[in-house]
Image 1: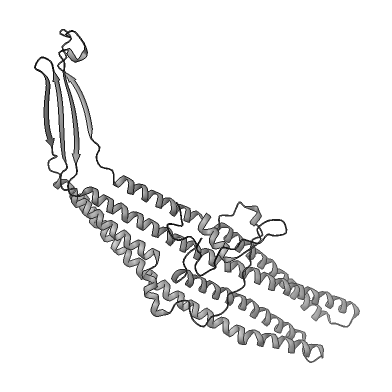
Image 2 (image 1 turned 90 degrees about the vertical axis):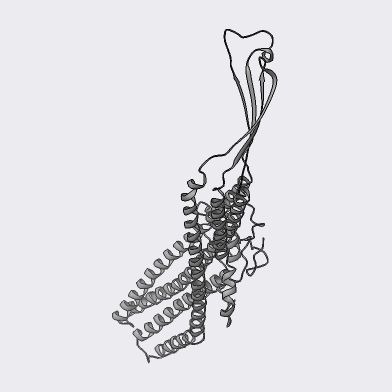
Length: 427
């Protein structure tokens, strides 16, 4: 299975202590989504249907065989075998000959449908991969935030316990002990909320991976580290136009235009009446043992009856062209938005990592030192802790935004999708 820019091969999820799948890499999650996702499975079935339509398009009108016996007189049944009796029996073989290259145009319509369905399969895979990548990094964010909240809750609880002991000994005011107790309760509430968000993020990813009923993945964990910050995007802005033109959804829309054009030509070909030719053999003992005949038939007024079909085909062609224009414009807008999102997320993460986080840590260290030497009040120390806690949460959110923007940009413009080639995806 080809995975392009993600890895040389899909990594297997690590096993948890209970034997269930615990730590998943993004590559493994993408491979699972493209192999077992419901939307991808539906797109595969659409390819199967399009290929079945291709087989049907090759089918031409079958020959018609008819046998008729007439001139049966019950009072004069004759003698001998059935072939010697005075019955007029006619055997006729007819074949309809299509005119106007109808079979050719049917085949072209079906070929374009197969090509479009295969590209739509790839587009569906890209959309699913993007959704999984976003959900994966959201789960990673929820894990980190829950860890930060847990550390903060432990620190606050320890501070409250020490404050209560000091209050009992009489060397701490009740006001400061109350403040620390309130801080511990607030941290516990934040931890409960963070745990809920973690469970919800895990459930969302399990849904995208169609693992809701797999109890072994109940403890699913996003195990990849945050991606490194890069100074250059995966693709330059000037190359984005060519990348957009090669996107599977844009190419699929172009194939739908080709299909609609072929369908219009097929509708025009329907104005030419098909001819049915036939040959018959007649057995009439009273007249002659063997009589042969030929004939043909042509329906009348066929061209005048195709006005509605032609109008419908023209409307569908106009719709397909409009859809191609819409998809192309949306692809360009999405590409520009992704490039801007990546650049904004990268800049934000770099500022937090290089300036804000070190400053918040230094401020807390200074506050703790000053508090230990009696030069700072409790409220100021709590404010410094809250500031660092908020910065740590913001840092995790910035890492998630950067990871999501980078993954979506990579999936959209450069990386081949795992198993995305039609030959690799066997419907």
